[in-house]
Image (spheres, helix red, strand yellow):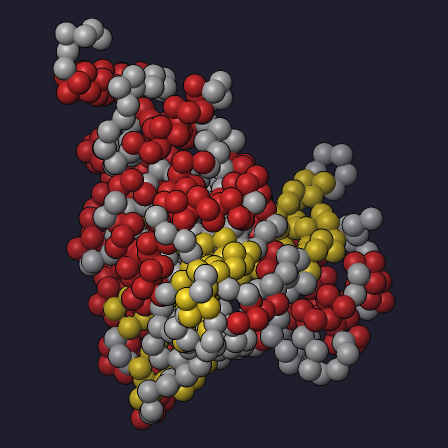
Length: 600
């Protein structure tokens, strides 16, 4: 471009040429990376494009998803998505990635169809929204939905031609899917009993909702180096697992007489800021020493995300999460960068200035529990590994409407709560729940079972996690009584969608060789993970266990716990972490199990 053009004309021509190049790339199937703009970038994608330019100008190479985002932003491609879907065509890899910005995942070869993931801030829907999702799942999907470990819903078996109608049908219900997949900020979690919990420190609903709307209304927060999770825990009885998130806000009580830089801080409820959780990479979020007034959570989260946008890895997808920026920089440097974005210092206090947080009740997500509102209760409905049919969803919606306050609350434990049920209507609600094939009561093992989609619906999974989870539960029926909560998490691959590293027993899918020419589904077994006050990454106990042998192995692990625990009050978590791996292997062997695949 010559000096004869004005700056505005130059920017127009740069944009025109970039758009033409992107169109040719889409039409030909090739995806070249547009050159850096000589006059600088403008608009909401500016920070992302500048981060890409910095990498390529320094000799680095963009990952394929970064090239795809640069060639054609997924939001700009929505008309092309609709045209492609109406023809009945499924996407090639670059469009499969782009359509995830709209909540759609093409999950072949596991299923020749789309899966749709929603956005449900704090995991809460109204009864009419829940019934509407049930109808859409029946009409345009497989007739069922899954509750996820982000207190969210997934609809599966969506044909290409039906995908636009599904997305737009959800919008008609007041539910969006925008940014629920790919390199974006995922569904915002908060504690499941927000506003109804006797022990909560703060109601997380307004803060989760504020962050949700902030994300939806700012395109510059889409197209991050990789996915990003944010969770709010208000101190309720049901754990939110905020320490598995990139950003965790933990409600804490600050005592009197605490100062920061000479200014006395207001006593009361604040949020503690934790950063860098990513359990698939064996890391839980760590305390930054920062506390903040709850109303400033959106502002602080925005600043954290923007530092990540500028400095996250856009070359190596395996290192493209916030954890790796924190590992490279250290927390002090990262917090200084956040403060620079905010234009003010953050408040830092010693942990001793904060009161101990209320404990979690690991059974509170199942059964009937009194709310802080006199005479009202929540009912925790057990889901068989998070799955429910459209017919069951309609019944749950009707119970919430006629017996409760109209809300349905999803939990990170893959089940749901019906809130606001008066004492006088409990029997009626429970009867209808039972009549549709669900239950508000279950055994200890089933209450703590968590399983990802598995290879029946995910191309990355190496095992049928939901099927194997049910096999474990069925095997244990009537064989032993466990009087303490035990969480068993099954995840199909190292991505850890089911958070296997925070389970008492974690199972991660693997292909197990049997002889020279046979492979079967199986698992690596980890033990002793925890969350909240017991945060800990589980350790590997056994490797390469065939799936057919897992139920019996879990039984022997639990029998070893019952035989060798320090007393009836000792939890499985405490028992597991009181022994080293060799001792635990020996205890399992002593209970009659050979050291199958024992880790040396």
